[in-house]
Length: 65
Image 1 (cartoon, rainbow, N blue to C red):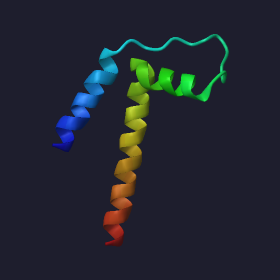
Image 2 (cartoon, rainbow, N blue to C red; image 1 turned 120 degrees about the vertical axis):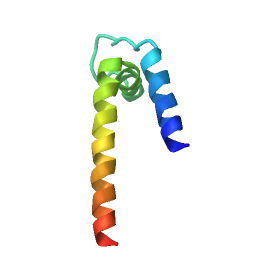
Image 3 (tube, rainbow, N blue to C red; image 1 turned 60 degrees about the horizontal axis):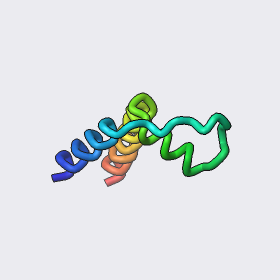
């Protein structure tokens, strides 16, 4: 179930058009977040970073148990 949900979310994120920059960095936090999550290039890196963080947290938790 979780794998299917994550695969579906990744497919939706990659299928949507990227929100373009407004020209000024830092104009709005939500604009920047939307851009990073909707851009296939940025979201790929973001997803990989999240997977790495979750994996490290899982390994640390499992070692403590």
